[in-house]
Image (cartoon, rainbow, N blue to C red):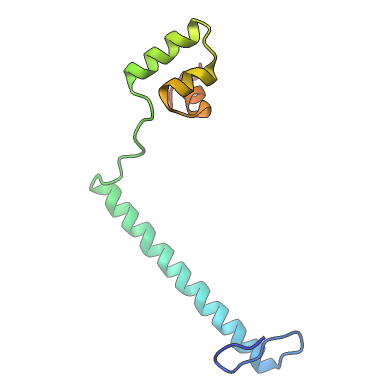
Length: 101
């Protein structure tokens, strides 16, 4: 396999080619680590100023009350989820006995 820098990397590559490949990989790994660090700092600053409020609730309190009423009447949860335009898993999380989503 040929790279555009004129180096050839294969199973029987020269030691210099292996060194160059290792160095390029190390530099790429270092750059990625720096990017992640900056990203984490940016997220922390955004959270501090209140830009990260979390995900919006899929069901309002009124919809949740309606969903619980329908389920108690025996309407299948899949049908309740369809009526409310949410997924079944989302509905299960909201009406689970161990708390709301």
